[in-house]
Image (cartoon, rainbow, N blue to C red; front, side, top):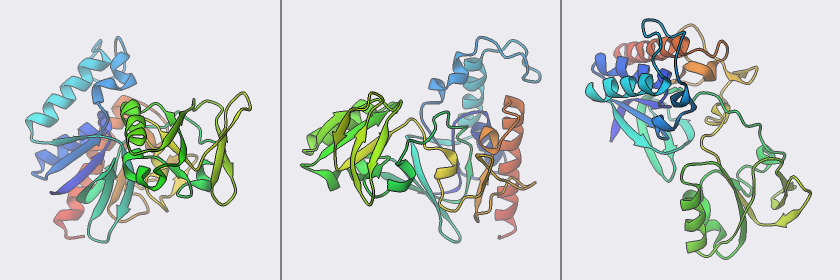
Amino acid sequence: MNYDLLIVGGGPAGLSAAIHARARNKSALVISNDPLASPLCKAPAMANYPGLPGVTGRELVERLLAQAKDLGAEFKRGRALSVMPMGKSVMVSVENDMAEGRAVILAPGVSRAAPLEGEAELLGRGVSYCATCDGMFYRGRPVVCAGDAPNFDEEVEFLRSIGCQVSVARLAGLSILGTDRVTGVQDAKGVEIPCDGVFLLRAAIAPARLAPGLETEGGYIKVDERMATNLPGVYAAGDCTGQPLQLAKAAGQGQAAAHFAVEAMDQGK
């Protein structure tokens, strides 16, 4: 099914965008891991969110989720792996599935993990972010899996089930070896594990890596006053756009991004 608006991220920015899109009678699909597994949900009390003093992080997320669902927003559980502008539409790959919309709002928050040594250089040449997407290329071959994705164990078992020789490593201190192709990994203790492929199964992809050519500034996604990025049909909101990393700012930017995305649709842009 095609949607008017795809929203990557189920935090305050993404849910605010979904609420506004539905209020403007546009279909909206929110793509995210379980919103209630967010670190925000562990906050015992929010002192700086306007109008809701003392609300817990979980209560705030639950209220936003309920409002978005009541208005008719749809949800798809999974990790967004890439964003591809296609002219008049935007495609988002979600695990081994695809979603299509007229525009997309990136609201995944920020990635706390630094890229691994060799990750960017060998992406697509032995480094993958999705076992069910790329596992078949490594049937009968040695691979290493590392990460913290909610479905990490499931992805590892999938690789084993299709005949991959799977080793599991910790992300911390891991470096990826190889020049033209992956040849192995080295862990924090200096131990080398030969392999043909490395599956980095993080809970989320770093926002700036979701879309090839996406312009960044200081490690954050660069947006203009309309929350638009340099890519057609791609908007961004919330922590991924930079400081200050505040809930009220995230919710406001989510609303603004949806407003301008819908305005562009209605104007036929």
